[in-house]
Image 1: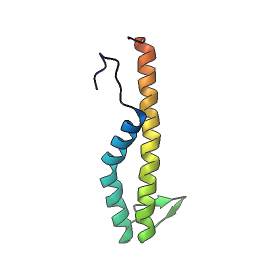
Image 2: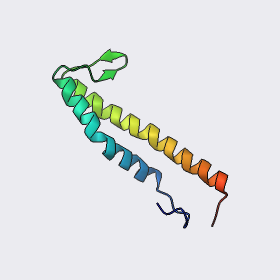
Image 3: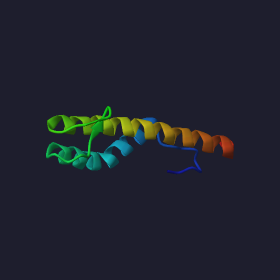
Image 4: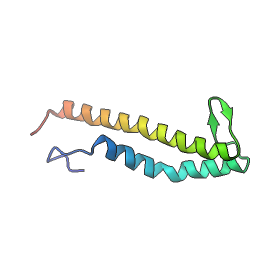
Length: 86
């Protein structure tokens, strides 16, 4: 990211990079839950079987959205603290 030119990644680029980066971890958790491991908890209950794999992907999407919002908020704060350079 080149902050000198005032460029910053778009929200969708942040979202996609977080989703793609964390997808293997959530996929491993989902596969482990399919085989009976206690790795996926959805709505306060442990989930097993094929539903756990789907829930792991849904949780990955939620995780990516939340952290992309926080990342964009951090960019906003950084711009405010440094003053907009155009």
